[in-house]
Image 1 (cartoon, rainbow, N blue to C red):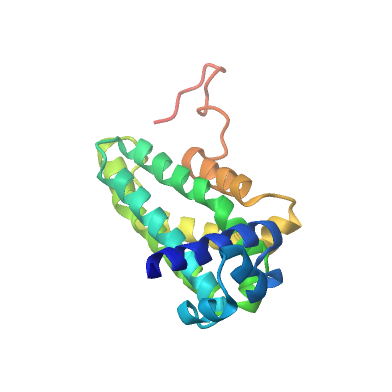
Image 2: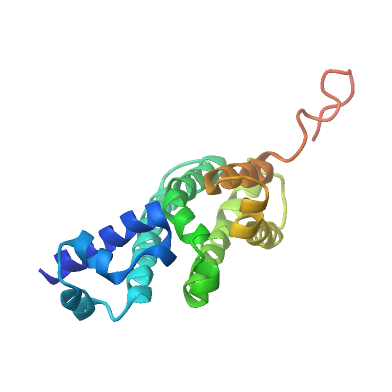
Length: 200
């Protein structure tokens, strides 16, 4: 019963945040959406921030499970990298209203938690990158350099201020960033089509 009520509250918050952003959601409407009294709500969550934290932690657990499935699968490094990116993009739609709903400004502790988690997730790509370099799927780059570059790029690009300034959505920004990381800027192999030497 306790788990059921907690899940109902988290589901209600996720639905309300998706429509209105976290700042606009009140505990009164949250309790009403979950079908419980406000008194019951406070029995399970001390305040609205605690509910938001629950939503974020549940999202992290979903991403963790999905990315672990990809990491453990018998796939080439390139497919693993793409698979992890797909998981992140799929869940970006839940993070988007949180990110754009003043979460960084109003709940800096929660935003720091999100930022730390995504850096940790990206850090686990080092092994995938190293394996890809060893197998020839990727260029032989230093994995930690690649990971540091991705973390810096994620923090620079996948933040509300940058995305809103450039008229992007969070999934679009993910696609652009990781497409750039995986494939670079070149539209073709150097020298291709003009008789010059091909890359390698």
